[in-house]
Amino acid sequence: MKTVGDEVIEGLVLCRVGADRLAVRACEVTAFEVPHGSAPYAGADFTPGAMAPADGKLLRHHHTSMVVDSVEVHSERLPLLAVPTVLRQAVWGGALSGFVQAGGLLWPVLSLERRAGTPEVAS
Image 1 (cartoon, rainbow, N blue to C red):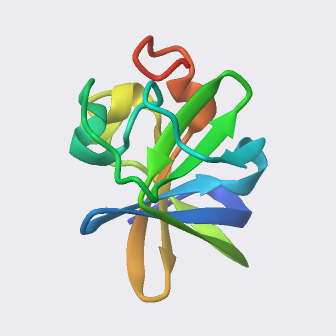
Image 2: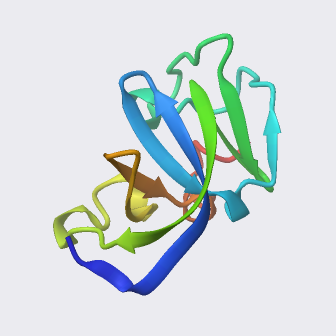
């Protein structure tokens, strides 16, 4: 995979959603909160009405939120790998901003800021 210019990300929130994983730039998370019923669950590809686990974690970016199963803060600097052209608009409404490799695994990086314009994510 190609890198996105020379962009390096410092500070990620690594999230688990079932057997899947995703990452969010730490600077995009304005708060961690207790989940509530109207917050979208990142599992099942943000399908409206998907049920989050009772012990899930809510990540907030101003007026946008999303619930994941678990979070871990990763402070190591990592190069941002490019999104393949075929996935740019097809995945998460264009909110996929790249990939990082952490702990020997490839993590898709989701932009909460870009997801903010999607009605089912606003809460």
